[in-house]
Image (cartoon, rainbow, N blue to C red; front, side):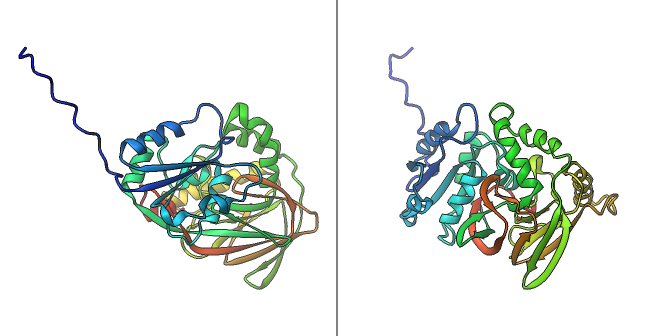
Length: 320
């Protein structure tokens, strides 16, 4: 013992010093205790100036990003619907965005292969690696919205509708339970216009996909890229949602180079920059997991390179 005062602890990392981070969050997303306060605290410990904005009912998303040019990073914290709506409001503004996984399924974050803990997500922000990806713009009766993952009419929208009351108790498992209930979904004739070419088919739904991975990063189908300037249009011919499981198996086999498909016939895939969808039986719509009261018809248009998402993944790792 010398009686001297011990030296102070070394200063914490200031890797984000001088950076302004805008955090827009949905307090109603997800279930259980939020990890967002810890994430924000760690951002500040690393030197960032953080501005937090809580989503309010009936306020347009554009209001939250009207001064986005003053920030170096945008964080969207919520479910996929919150993330995609915020990304649409920030499209082509060239500010990298973190899709903070604060919802139930967080498929956008899964497609970007993001970690889940606040400390790891701060490291993603510090790393500043961003990939530029496409977005979709869906128009229904003159009203436009954006989506990052997919838009769909038919069985997938019905599955999301039936999962709503289960999500609070069962989380992501609610989607699986709801899929199992879709034993006898409505079937109808869909009328499509794909890049100006008319097409019709009989089935249970249409999905217009930008990202291609479902829960646990299982590929919906292979060859979906979020930055090729095109959608993958998935025509659902199967008699029920569970009959699509073999297609997931084929997609995994293709991703692992395990040979030719073992199954087939349940779905058909096409590529398009713009898709118009109508149905003889009006169907509900969903985009990025949010069910909407509007019904078919709708139009989906690709927005090439509309947003830069932060991720530790390489560009090839976000394709199926």
